[in-house]
Length: 361
Image (cartoon, rainbow, N blue to C red; front, side, top):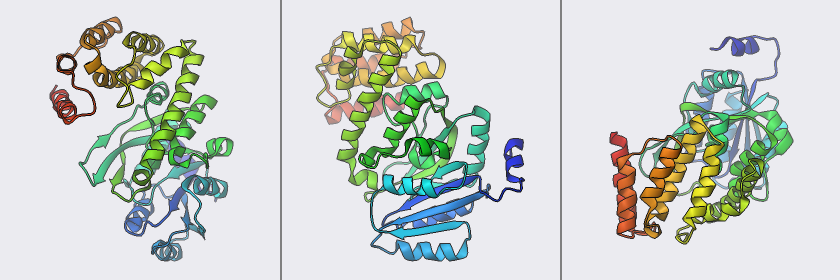
């Protein structure tokens, strides 16, 4: 363990370094497995705050058994509110310098806390996520996110750059910002955007520290439509913030965001290229790689309506010294010539074929 962390642990201070935040709502099926993954951490200087958010199944009975057996657990049971309100309540209760998230159906690897604390000490960041591995329904995948603060904040233009249940953050972040209890279906993305605007530093540990369970009953699946709508609104707000800060033309934003919609085949690609050129000229290293990665995905979505998408892509790659892969040019050319839009099965089959090609090289 890092010497800085060891010094903190060995101090006489009885206040725990970490407060673990677990909101629970009807989670009896996988709850014990999630709790055990926290109790089994190699780093043990934490309190475990659990709020039963009005469960109607057997969750509370499970939680009470764990509370009786483990003094580190602080359990509250009350009527149902929502996950954002519950997390804000936990943050108010927390005594630790750091708040670590976990969800009722996910599993933390045994050295998650230890590795995140080491990474935070190394990077000086305020908010730290990690890569995750999906399991359960669907295929098992490793989902990676950007590491550096600049790259995380660039990735935020396109998606939430931190896996919420993997995050460890300073308590002071939540003391200042809090979760948005109105738009709670996208409470994490909203918080990261406001944290970026406020200047908090972010990072991800570049390895899997959380196993993320996928199943039909999870909250993010049930509220998917509302979540997508809120995420679009948050994304647009952040694009305006970034373009204003970089003194780029905000009128270009609409053309880029059109490409994220299934119907967004009428985007002006000249303006899209101009928008991405602005971002690329203000980024370097990992942040620039993030822009190219997401730009490639949007070019693929637009290829059916853009006869010269492959040529545009090649020019941008050469201008900003990014490797021009033949596989990308091939898929752009095929989608353009055959006019295959992003809605059909053929598009998704070609996309899967393209990803398999990339994995080989």
